[in-house]
Image (cartoon, rainbow, N blue to C red):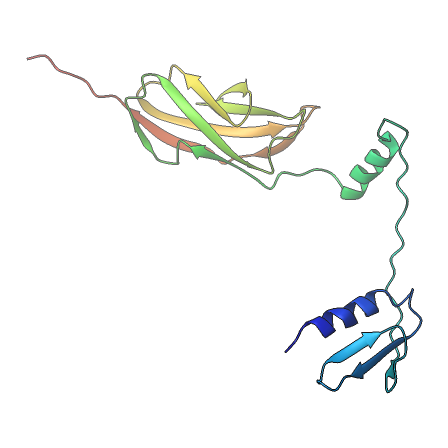
Length: 177
């Protein structure tokens, strides 16, 4: 089946507000034609009324964004919320070997950390503010440890908190003979 006539008809339907009349006919080779001009033997097509959408014009001052427009867009969207936060590394119940006192931590935060928001991490119950969702904690030695993270907004309000994550650090020892 040839698709060109279908595309032509769709084009005519899309511009029906501009074109008041449309015609169709089939030539001697069996090809269907569409036009805005009547041809001998053409049939008049009644097109449905065009779908129209009215949008509000966006006005911006020359060279600067309108703060009122941005504020209105934020209000329409409602308050920002994080969907999820979890400690991706170390994994829950993971045993880490020979880390030489340096723990690499990665957080999975969705959506990403917003400007002005900060991450607070509790390592073995002690809070510390970190920069970003990947960081290192030093002086982590053998034993059982816990890490938990939370995101705070600009005012210090809690936005989301991860579940506590327990992990283990082991260190090989070399015994003399």
